[in-house]
Image (cartoon, rainbow, N blue to C red; front, side, top):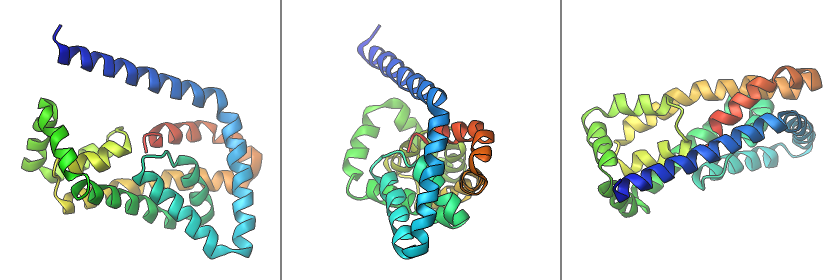
Length: 210
């Protein structure tokens, strides 16, 4: 087996272990997570009554900056979804656009070096160049970690318009899902938390790559 093949196998094994550990953690602690989110949502709602602008700005900054610096933001997104509804979705779009622009400017040279070293990435870059709209939409809808979608498309030189359009179109569904779960936790108390465990687990798994 050649050295590149060994690296691929090792990388895949490490990724599989990380994903398995993350899933096991979610399954084992989902009751604790949902209860903690309910307590946090109550605190946020109380703080919103006395300092609405500060609360909104804090949640927006946490989500946007978290996406840019590759910190998982699902719990904060659920809180924002429960308190502000679909309006919080602009933070996800803003974070994705900021990541893309950062990849096309400050990190552009690094992204080009990484892409040029791997045959698969070069093939993806060619596919993006040929069919940017189709590839951006399909990849955005796929169960791929969010950082790969944001910084990856920047490294592959995806045009701005197809990237931004796919970001906004696909994230509408993700935001609606988060709103449904967040509102159920915020408004219906422990009974809703219990009934939404499965959805919370699903949302945590899908958004955990941020």
